[in-house]
Image (cartoon, rainbow, N blue to C red):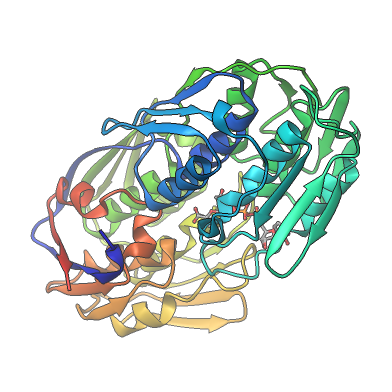
Length: 431
Ligand code: EPZ
């Protein structure tokens, strides 16, 4: 079904109460699915959500010869033995950012790769220069046109990539570039050291997945990763980590729409900056192992709240939009600076339509809390901006219509069903 002609009709009947089991993380599953190309034999991943970005990536792998089954219970089986070349012609690679994670695994396996340039949320230019530099540093010849990126290893493809082991210093702690460096080094003979790495839990998860398949990767989760290339990686069954951004979104829903919400599957260590903010605003936050409970029993009060998004363990850029919605109904004035993407405030005009008082100054949003937001019709511009509109709609005493919800479906599987379990009344309507 084409979700481009669906809307969400949102009203909240009563305080939110209940528990949500969080699925595997989109930003762990996407690179792990790409890395599975390096493994001989079948890869089985557990609890993988059927979100649009994952469907698009699987369609690309199927198109180049992989055999894939994705069951209702989330179990995903990938047999990449049918992939015979590193040339991706399927244009849907242009729709998602994660297709760039195929660059290294296909180069490593076939000695050459060519892909359409990646797409993804329109939250900034999102160049791929860091990725290109990594491949060049490891001996590949890389060509980039306005539509495609291609690379070839210096020698013929063998059972391991012929990329030259070396030391790579990333200019920025880029998640995607760190992942492509790891997956190219995994089967490159000799030792590769990657410095100034991203430290997100999803990076650790990719390394953990590859190590369980036989790789020798040390230091993931720190700013320096050492990889000793191996000749062979074997297919495994693996359970990726749960989605800290989805969990954070639902915890913010609990804070905004009062009541008590519990997320299951994500440890507090993956969400420290958000949990601290929720407590600072007056919420009761009770983490216990992989269960986090939030209760809001008094009005949200923002006293000198000033947030800056940063690579992990800093405040996650992927929770910035949802946090601005939260601060929009917290009394007091707060600021949030977006330091990773240059166009990640596109949702602000839509929140203003709902009565939010937000001033934008370059990469900073200055929010003055209001008592209530008003229901109206708004448009989702990207994934996390769309999620922030859903959260805002939960606080109004009327019906809000959200259009272009296909953006939201990229990262949240049936968001209306999850939130309705907590006591909202959200309908997905075909228009
Ligand atoms: C990943 O994107 C995530 N996507 C993003 O999540 C997330 O916001 C981002 O990491 C930061 O945490 C996936 O994992 C699929 P980066 P990625 O490379 O890898 C610049 C979501 O909502 N840069 O860490 O593309 C880039 O423009 C999505 O789930 C270059 O300049 O992010 C940005 O300013 C949105 N050149 C900064 O680095 C490059 O070659 C951080 O980007 C690569 C990146």
